Figure 1 (cartoon, rainbow, N blue to C red):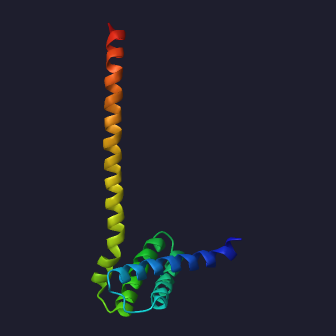
Figure 2 (figure 1 turned 120 degrees about the horizontal axis):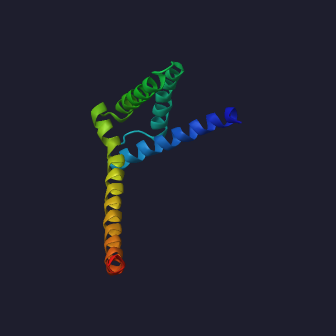
Figure 3 (figure 1 turned 60 degrees about the horizontal axis):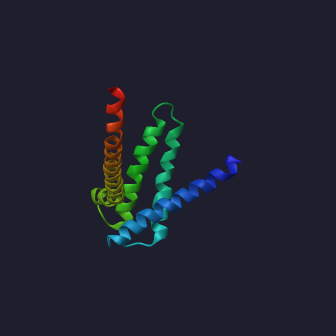
Length: 131
């Protein structure tokens, strides 16, 4: 079952990553190539998965080389530098982290105000039971 589904899952992952990269570059007006070139770049970068067969350090090497191959491929297909590619691809995750942090702060503020109000209501009850 996994032998049949694995190629489909990898293909779907490559399509999603390619769309993410292509849409990010399109939104920032930096895309000069069609989506298929971005897809080919991502498929090429996936070749680094072969390092996963090395015990202990294989997964780390695989991730490092995938990032390097992706940035190198984007540099070649989008006519930009690796640094600029890395910065452009970092914008959406950074924005997502900022949004999640803001939501967490709002949640903490709301929870704090609810807790304070609950304690104010319980305080007279607690003080009468102590005496």
